[in-house]
Image (cartoon, rainbow, N blue to C red; front, top):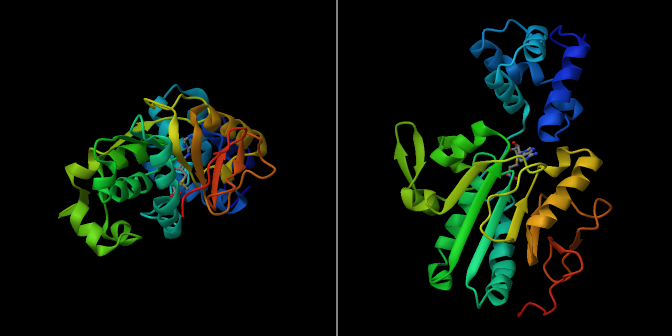
Length: 285
Ligand SMILES: C[S@@+](CC[C@H](N)C(=O)[O-])C[C@H]1O[C@@H](n2cnc3c(N)ncnc32)[C@H](O)[C@@H]1O
């Protein structure tokens, strides 16, 4: 028995379902929270406890129950301009470099893989919109994908609570890009139209990109994969990446010892580049 009285096999099955559907493994501190996370799902579907939930998952073909269960076990933690200096560095270096690289075709494709409820993609969209003169005449595509349909539905709506909006978003941006409504802070249409969101499992689905991605954010997602899944994930990111592109990982993540698909950028601190095709020219000061 673990914690709330459910059988160990119930926990094992739930963890197996999560891993097979998303690649995610649960760290020990999150296993203890499974029951709490799944309570609203059990209530919504009229299931008495974890054992009954597992029995229903195993014996029924209720797709909604399966989706809701997996969704509730995912860690969707995110906020605007998470690790703020990463965005400052990208604005100062990677975007400048990509302007040089893509100067002829004048297109920029950014993929936020594991975007959760959208804050990371909206952060980039605001940043680029505020550099309007630099990107005039460019085709800019910002795509946010996540395996969680609940997170993606929220991202598409673009409605954030007072707590969420204050986390990382300076007041000027809050007022410029969001309207205060009864339900919370709603992203203005001009911001929402700059980002496309879709439900995708990055381990199995092809990202909906019009072109190979110039800049890929894959932050705070890979750390919950097993080494084998992580290896596979890097291979998927590599396929989606333009030959001269940058990959952004979370603060606690690295490619070192994980993959040979990407290498630390020798020029741009904290970023990664596809292996073999490292950018040849140094970034102008
Ligand atoms: C902790 S959040 C990070 C959000 C954002 N990237 C950030 O750093 O603020 C991790 C997200 O990855 C998503 N995720 C987990 N496994 C995934 C998979 N196989 N494919 C796509 N998204 C996945 C989760 O649903 C979750 O929303």
